[in-house]
Image 1 (tube, rainbow, N blue to C red):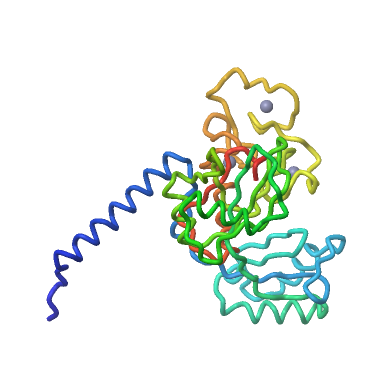
Image 2 (tube, rainbow, N blue to C red; image 1 turned 30 degrees about the vertical axis):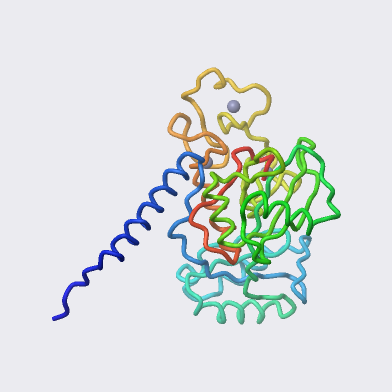
Amino acid sequence: MALAHVPSGNQQLLQQRAILRTLRREMQATRNGWICNKGNPRLCELNVSNLPGGINDPNIETQLHLELILNRLPNSYRKVSYVMYQREYTTIGVFNNRYKPEIALLINSHQPTWTVSNPVLRPARMYFFARSPTDNNNLPGFTNTLIRMNHLVNDGVTRVTDIRLGPNEDTRITLAVSQQNRNRLLNSEGRIVFFNRTALIYDDLGLVCCSRCYSYDHSTDQCTSGNVKCITCGGPHDGECPFQRFPGLRRCASCPSTLAESHHTHSQRCPSLLRHASLLANRVDFQYNWLLIPVCPTLY
Ligand SMILES: [Zn+2]
Ligand SMILES: [Zn+2]
Ligand SMILES: [Zn+2]
């Protein structure tokens, strides 16, 4: 019989430190409203485009065709977990990688010109907003400044990739980021030092939210929903809400729920937001335990 493993004094110390680190991160996450992404397994997905070469024509009725095809898949309820129709491509969530060849073959037997492929995971990016306009021609110089100011590791991965005008005439600065440097930014409460001030930094997941119907499936300019929804009560009206004066009566416009039992629209614990954020995090070649997402969707 094997003896139980007893850690040496040194190992014990290391284990205690690891536990303390985790506890500290948990408290930090609660304080800052970070969204938990722990235990979300890597998704099995297929991307479908309705033209050769991975090009997608949004005018072709992909949904109509694909629903008919997937209906012919034997035991499809055990193989396909979800289908997300997007402008650039359609994503099919698959319960197990082993079903992918069968689904790809079936689609191509009905639509030989469609492209079915594994999703390409993209590198992780973060972004923040700065008040002052910056010289967007000197990305390498700006990278060096940020690395120096924030005591980041100059690892070649972490670099400023984009500077553009953001909402409220702020400048939106995007950087590719490595795991070690993201951890350093998390250790400083998710804030980045930028010249003589600090700014909250967010994970660039490509999250969108419609400001008409509050769906996380599409942005406002792609909204096809006929009715606007009220951000306060989720009801089909615009203008002033009759429930505005009753703080206990709120209903999330993104979720199917009842008044009073619900959470606020855009709440950091909204199940629709959590689901979409973790789906998007799965498209990134990165290990996220926590997601840093702005409370206000205009900052997505
Ligand atoms: Zn909408
Ligand atoms: Zn209302
Ligand atoms: Zn919700």
